[in-house]
Image (cartoon, rainbow, N blue to C red; front, side, top):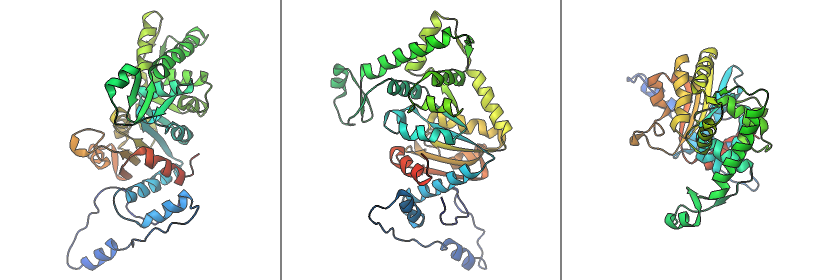
Length: 338
């Protein structure tokens, strides 16, 4: 995507050495890009709308547009090893289809345990329903309906689907001639993707395009519970440290790295943590609804990660405050991701 030429594609405050001789020069630079009104037209394409948004101010719009430019630069950098990270809740919202389309454009995915749960449940016929944040949760419990934000899920459409799908696939892995007795999370997820039939599955697409899925919190959820139960009466071990060593190797083997991080927590931190050992990410875009004043990593701006060396001082990076279910489809459409 081509847009206005912006010299500083990062969220840092622009720093100036101000003295009397420089003031007019600096003022000219600060006022270089003029605000222009968006002009809507019938049947306007998303890419046309986004290109006009290069010239609007306001709240998160300019951050979103800058994030699109950074991602475009990252995708066009052939030397760049690209990470995608996101938490599980997005997979239940209907954004799963967007994430599936994105898989082939990245080299590695880092996500949370529940992603496997929702991906399996949906791949094996689980029906998720639109609901509301405002409901009687005690009544929902009596009715056997889970609430995940404003998504409603009948109990058997989640837990039973995951259990049945897990056992079917895990037993096939266990009885195969290539069974290894010990797997890293990424190796096990690869084997699941290999056996899944649903082309709309994140795990399946990762297998088809040879994209590693790292899941440092794999035991936190229904999938992890099923693994625990399976290990009680089968010769099976999960080696989580093997994946950590592989992430370490990725950091040391790639001089240029970039990341799109959607939401915070362990998935975001695993990306920036391992990249500090190569002096930080070169490209980074982070979408969040969290505030930095709650003390959470989810709320921490990417500029904070610069102080840790997790993002390079001269990297292109942007934190975008906003709802990923709104932002991500627009951003990926603008980048022609399909």
